[in-house]
Length: 265
Image (tube, rainbow, N blue to C red; front, side, top):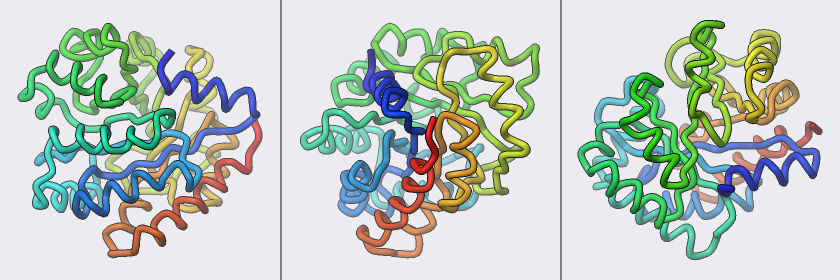
């Protein structure tokens, strides 16, 4: 059982939905980034999605792209991202961390070397957005063997033919992308998302978490009411981009977490 599995087990027993927060590692610099990451659990974050900066983030909108650029310009890379996880684990050995990013930096680093270092650093799972199920042998299967969850994205276009393939070898949870397109492009609504979540849950026992298009406490509450939890990324990254203090960023995160947690399972 990974920390992700343990977290969802705890949430189910307590009748709560999950709140997942995404931040880009190293944005705007290492010092402020690790300060924010360390503060996320106290702000109500159940699972941390830690973005791995990459030069060609094709699935990300302008907000996340700019965050990655700031991080890269500040010298952030895969090695330093793993170090950030180690620094976090000095004080927190229970909050799950999911690494979210693209395959190229991992491939360049060496897959088996990366998996060994990621596991020892304290990463619990990963979302690699540009590796489809057809490429499971590249990273997904080795990751599972290393004891890491491999979390897959399902989308509005994951039809009855595609969905079983998407769910094969997926573990930890299913991340439902609520809108077609890039991050931060539109708002998610329960009317559109509810039937899709129900459809996915008919095909898997895994928790289904909804992301993309969630940016207010009210939105987080609404989405959590029809799923197992909500993910917020761009709205949090916007707070960091606006040069808000770490305290202000974490206060904003807490409002979102409170919204998601106000819904019982």
